[in-house]
Amino acid sequence: MKFVKHDLGQRAGGETVEVVLQGNAANVRLVDNANLQLYRYGQKFNCISGNSKDSPVLLEIPRAGHWYVVVDLAGRSGTVSSSVRILEGEAVNS
Image (cartoon, helix red, strand yellow):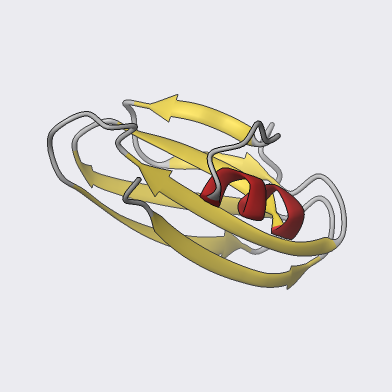
């Protein structure tokens, strides 16, 4: 499966990640290192989020750790580009 991985590095819990998409709707997933490995090998994994048609997508990092945002089309045709940034001092539910 083709996908784009954005390495967020070591993050604190409660931080908000903004993902901006251009192109087709895509799956946008926030995963830790263990779940990234499961995703890569096509195994069942846990993530935050899912298919996104609207941009930007805001995701909250649930706990401290090393995090990644993964963007893919889930086998659908089309193209998508993505950019990611950590929002300073903003919560997802604000």
